[in-house]
Length: 216
Image 1: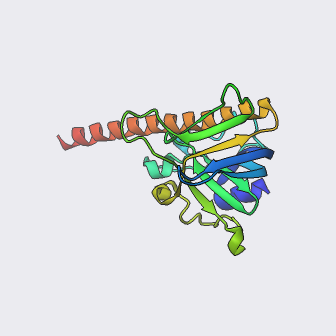
Image 2 (image 1 turned 30 degrees about the vertical axis):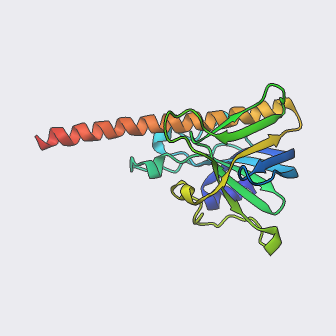
């Protein structure tokens, strides 16, 4: 199934935590807390580009057999190289998509070692996000299942501003090891995005210097 998904969506399932005890979330200060039991969560990683260093993965919970195919590109642009990992939450008939970027932070509270909290980032000095942007697919009340379109229409990071706003998410794992392992996977995905951005910034600087030198 994971290989089938990779072939159609060009994204591999890098981490798969089944039988999550509970996921809690709220959409805002005036909305109540929602709770779903026996959920499932995954990390979807886009196939590696030539500049992102190949497709090797160090994720603890990787479930893909063998190495993923390499999707090569020569266009040094952010839209084709910086492809963030998706955090996918499966809640009954609903699927929730959250991008792993610097706009969100995750942490394990000391007094709740089996709980992973996801909140808006507070690391930036200005323009801190006020919410976690998440795309919700499916609506049990209207008998609509939360499936992904094969063309991923409306699911790209360029459409993140149109996603719904959430105040926070809390994911309860069965064991502390599972919680720490998935937290490490999220951290690695974020670090990879930062490394890709550094590479792209350097390429752009070299391109500008080359254009200036050629113009003279």
